[in-house]
Length: 135
Image 1 (cartoon, rainbow, N blue to C red):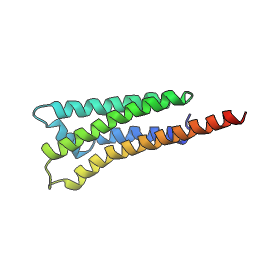
Image 2 (image 1 turned 180 degrees about the horizontal axis):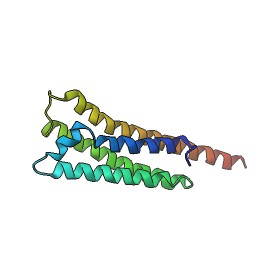
Image 3 (image 1 turned 90 degrees about the vertical axis):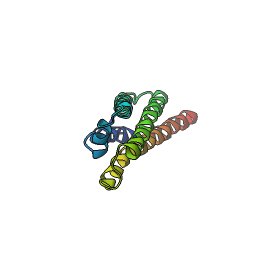
Image 4 (image 1 turned 120 degrees about the horizontal axis):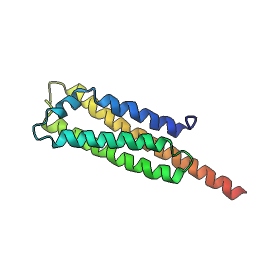
């Protein structure tokens, strides 16, 4: 399970998403007066973390693993959208611009890691299919 590169990418997504909770962008999201940005951001991050954690243990069924990575990536993209919404509405642009941009960058890094995991799962599946043709 851990010896495959896609499992390492999936494992790296977890600290990236959890680390977002300790950034200024997350604290700005919690100050949202309407509450829909903070609730949506937390829900999207929790779904992404849960689906990524579940996906790590699907290493024997690559087709199913690719489907679940795509679903987790959808929630990660939703979290990026919510974070950008917080950045432009609740965030104090100019005061902590670099820290807030790096906070959004963490979520974008999570999307990139999920894409890399999906790519390597697909390459692994293609390798298995080519070996089946040789037999």
